[in-house]
Image (cartoon, rainbow, N blue to C red; front, side, top):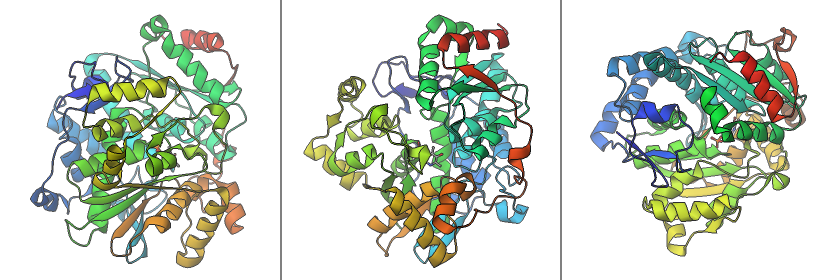
Length: 477
Ligand SMILES: *Cc1c(COP(=O)(O)O)cnc(C)c1O
């Protein structure tokens, strides 16, 4: 299995080579030359596997430069009931991503039982172990520099804490995260984790990370890396839980199942698209957005017109406040028949800030062949969905999953099983949960009093040079 760039300008590479890189040298995203295939008999053989064995069966088809025994060991130490326990018993946690049944054909797949209570732990925990392994093999180190407004940064820190060869420098906007999110990150005492609290908004943090990455000499000297949502290792790890969710929900292997996915950067649902391309009988992939509805517009009209930060709104499902969905490029590459010239042309207009509109035939493909649908939600929808799911089913869902619930209602066909991907636990979003239900959401055992733990961070000015000076002092070269 070799990897190429969506824009056609990269010689084929092995998995370990693209794992540590970000964008391909031509500005595109890495993607496998072909998708591994599973036929019905092979799917039937996978259906009874536990999460770890299923993960190995799927991921090993994408990786041929890590010995199978080593890959298996990395997967086995990642997907354990102890890591994905959410304060519950071992027996309850053994399924890693269990389903919650709402009615006979409507389910929620739990993806948020990892240490930071969001689905990003599903991929990031494996990435931490893969990074450590590959760096150790090569005798190299990497310094991950990232910007976060909450979920990504904490998932990266919990995945990389204590890992050899890896430091994490995470920029976050000073005073802008929820007390819970801040406590999650800043209470980590590991020597390889650095929290940089930047006096500015999230955009300022992102701009600083961009400036550091644009300084090629600095980037090379200080071995700067990233674990953002375009990372292929994250996508491949996410493919697994679509298989798991499918086997848990389908009455018979081969039956169609619809998945509904709260989306921002199109990373989670991109993995669903890949699972479908591999032969998993997914009928529809339903994209759920909030008021930042660039993706809803794309899947309803075929027009992809990313918006600037001035047109990106702060909402109560904040991890989806994104107006440029970086992983969409991977799906559109398939949609245009893997024609990298065509793709590069479309993304030239995206990079210029213009965007593009699909032809009628391409739009028909998106809808009919690739099975995509979409729906957007407002704050009022979110509150109504949280209330409805609690009143009707006695289940508390977080505001992002609530956006998924509305999209599921808009598109479901009660003859087909629908699985809504849970992307975070309600405990992370206490204000919105109180507004909807009038009570504080349950918090997993072990996280009570999180906000009272000692916090470790450095407050810095929003200035790229000041941040670079900070990095120089702490990175041994
Ligand atoms: C990151 C995140 C999303 C969006 O996921 P993408 O892969 O960027 O589409 C949705 N919900 C929550 C809670 C998240 O943390």
